[in-house]
Image (cartoon, rainbow, N blue to C red; front, side, top):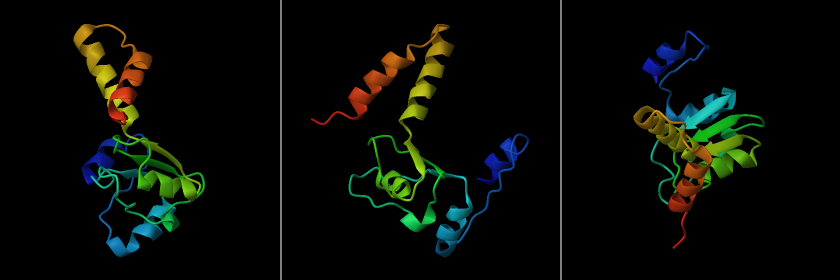
Length: 124
């Protein structure tokens, strides 16, 4: 986190710190953006790593887990008024960028998104 903060600090202030688990809620409430980058949520029964009190109205929440349309983390954040997204868009655009590099053609992002959603979110 510290290295990432250094890398992007030229464009926007981005403090990063390791904080004790007992203070996560207080720190999360102060954030405009929370990125959930742990494997929590990859199992259907996983609970949110943060309680609803950690989120606030208008906050942006991003869960890198993309195997479900909505994780418990996202659901918990939305109940508190935060806006939440999962990692499927990141996966999609990484693939689209690679497609462009390899083929030198504009990727068919809409077609890729539909195929990705059908494959990832299949229910059989």
